[in-house]
Image 1 (cartoon, rainbow, N blue to C red):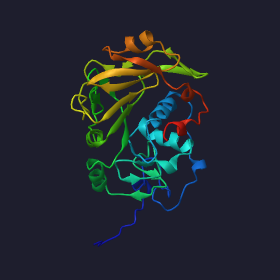
Image 2: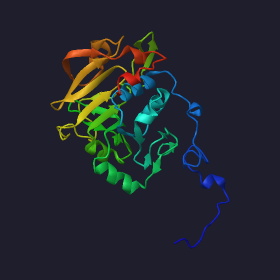
Image 3: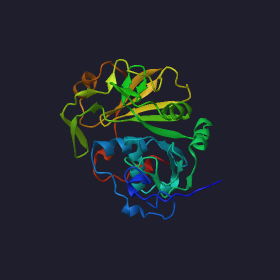
Image 4: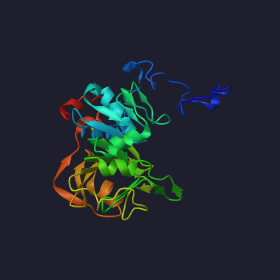
Amino acid sequence: MVDYVVQAIDKNACWQAEGVYFEPAFSGQIKKPLATIEPLPFDDRKVICRRCAMEVKKGDVLNLGVGMPADVSKVIAEEGLLDYITMSTESGMVGGIPSALPNFGSAYNPEAIMDHGSMFDFIDGGGLDVTCLGIGEADQYGNINVSKMGTRLTGPGGFINIAQATPKVIFCGSFMGKAEVQINNGRISVLKEGSIKKFVKDVQQITFSGKYAKPSQEILYITERCVFKLIDNKMTLIEIAPGIDLERDILSQMDFKPEIFPDLKTMDPGIFHEKWGGLNNYIV
C-alpha cells in the first residue's frame, strides 16, 4: 500500500540512471529506433566485443556484465541479429539492447523488466546459455579477479552467481592495461606496451576459480591480441591475432607461461577491419 506520494523538487535528486535524467526507451514507454543508437567506434575494444559475439548462437540467452562486456550488445545490434539472441543484465533487464556505462543496468527497448531477486532465481536456476564478463586480472590456473584491484575493493556483485551457473563463460578485456595499439588492414600492432599486466602468476583475490569450474563449462578469455581457453584446468592459448608476435607481444608480457594449443589458430582477420558483417556466419 502507498500512503504518500512526494513530488521531488530538485531534478538532480531523482535521475532515472546515472547518465540520463529520463530515457523513455529504458522504461518501455517507447521503442527507440536502432539507427539512433550509436555503434561502437572501431578500435581494439570493438575487436574484442566482436570476438565475444562470435561465441553466441541463435536462440541463446546472453548475460552481459558491466564495462566492456556490455558493448557486445552494440556489435550484435550493428550486425542486425537482435531478433535471434535474448540479452540480459543482472539488474533484471531482459531483451532489447543493454546500455553501457554510465547507464549500465538499463536497456533500450527491453522485452521485460524483472526484479533483482527474480533475475537471480533465473540465473541460479540455469536460465543463461552464455555470459560475457570482465577480466580484471587472470592467472595461470584460470582464476579471475574483478573484486579487489590493488587497494580498491569493489566486491563481486553478481559475478560469482553468473560465472558459476552459466554453461559458457567468456571473460573479456584488453591484454595489457594502458597499452596503445593500431589496427590497420586486418592486422593489429602494439605501438606502446602497457604498464599494467592483466595475466599474472596469482590473482590478488579469486572471484572466479578455474580449479572449481564445472567440467561441463566452457571457459574463454578473449583479448585483442589472443584468445585463451581453460583446458584441463590450464590456461591454454588457442588463437593469436594477425600482426601479433607470440613471444614479444604475448608470452613476454605474462607472468606465467600458458599452454599452447597444438593447432594454434589465427583470430578471424575480418574483425580487424572497420566494416565486418560476418557475425551471422558464426551464430547459426
